[in-house]
Image 1 (cartoon, rainbow, N blue to C red):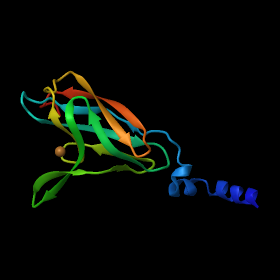
Image 2: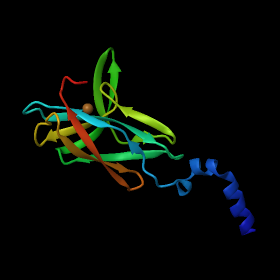
Image 3: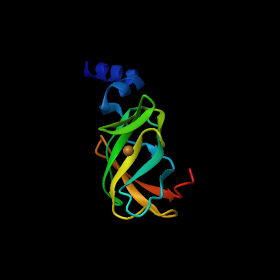
Image 4: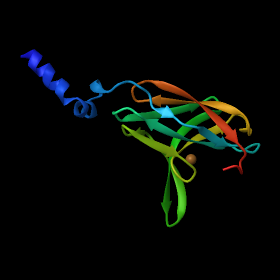
Length: 149
Ligand SMILES: [Cu+2]
């Protein structure tokens, strides 16, 4: 009887994966090029943009971000109200299985709060993504001229 139940589960395959974390592989998503604009002396905040591709079948969540470049970091979304853009922190950045998200200017981004030093064009710094599974992933962020893109 137990054997039959196991076979039935195996036959469910992909659909079981979508429903239960137990069937999800633990492969981390693949971050693409991560970048930030250079900041001026005394500017307290910076923003990080990147793509993150989830090539696995299962949804993943980024719950937290940290960086040595700033005192704090958070995930922000941008909303528009009567043509006015405003941004607010979100708790979770969800990346559905077999999909890719893009963090970009005017959209969702990672906010660096309390920069310890100006971000200088040509330099890089580390950003850590903390996933819901407990895994973490360190990404190199390239700083570009403020006018570059
Ligand atoms: Cu922001």
